[in-house]
Amino acid sequence: MTSSIEAVTRDWEGLTIPTAGTYLLDAAHKRVGFVARHMMVSKVRGEFAEATATITVAEDPTQSSVTATIQAASINTAQADRDAHLRSPEFLDAEQFPTLEFRSTGVKSRDGNEFVLTGELTIKGVTRPVDLDVEFEGVGRSPFGQDIFGFSASTEIDREEFGLTWNVALETGGVLVGKKIKIEIEGEAVRQA
Image 1 (cartoon, rainbow, N blue to C red):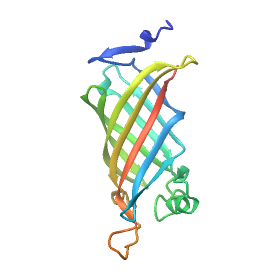
Image 2: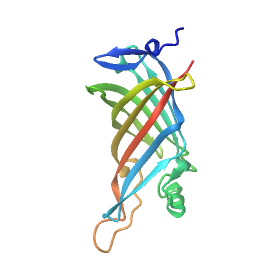
Image 3: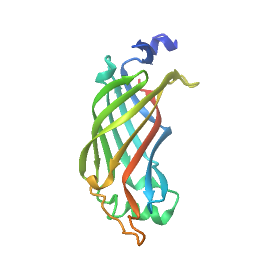
Image 4: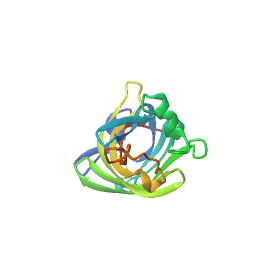
């Protein structure tokens, strides 16, 4: 096997992409984040510190697939009481449902380096279809000889569709926690031998 970067990349519709193979999400170079509305006036940001993903890049990139597992108990909003509440049965119920799962069902090329990754997201035992807007960030080789590619993805879900219905009505109208949750993912994937 040659060591040149050309050996692990290819051109596809004017985009330099990785060759077919299996890639794992690099734990040191990833963020699985979210944004929720708070009290109808501000946003709370958080992330899941522990997540894994396997990305299978196919010969035809539109036949590629992704599976991901997120550890519910690893939620972090930088506020211990809120994080404990989010792990509780009123929200994620991390003890009974320790993981959130994603399994892709398709990939559609949108424009240039933009794709739509369709799939099924399971939270608290409820599975719903989701579409992730994915931006392919590029491909390269690390100083340690690892073949990598970068990506970012986002979507918005209605948390109540997944059984996350806890809320408090506000005296001034509205609710404490918004229904819509924006999911923001950034990462690098590393080719496996």
